[in-house]
Length: 225
Image (cartoon, rainbow, N blue to C red; front, side):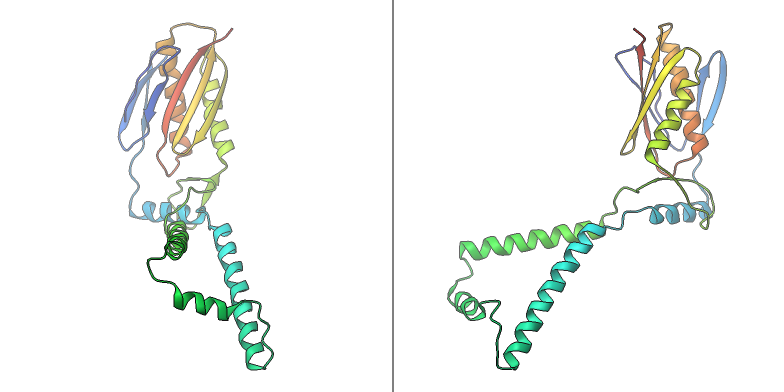
């Protein structure tokens, strides 16, 4: 974990990790800790991540639709040809002549093969690489109890934590990827201590929410005009 406090133009950045942190707040000391989960806790974390993982619905529907259309065309062509009345939706004869007369190093053939290979690779990557969860999974310690927060609600909770610091007139937060950015507005006093207080309050709220994934916290302090 790294902590720091700067002026109004430099954000305070903190990464919530697996170590403990002590930070001053109004003369007192708050200790926040993010301990690694136990074996059962890790199983519960994996269950929550799987539950909220995107299902890749759009690529699956597109591929399924294309394969269905291709299967219908092939079946119709085959059945009609066996019945003696070929539909000729696809110019199979011309395709066979072209394939027989085209060398492997033909530019058009290589371009088509490259496009098909890239599309196939993209589909494999989409199927294997996990996407970002639709919700923010929070730690419960129970694989049968899965809880997730909307990202907007998660960001709003961090903003409310910043607004609870004395001297804060307003605060807003946004969550993009694994970064939570909080902007606090004050009338202007000791910005260094103020930044420490805001970032400690945000970290405390993060610990209370207990998200499964680690978040990098950036706190920016602005003076009220």
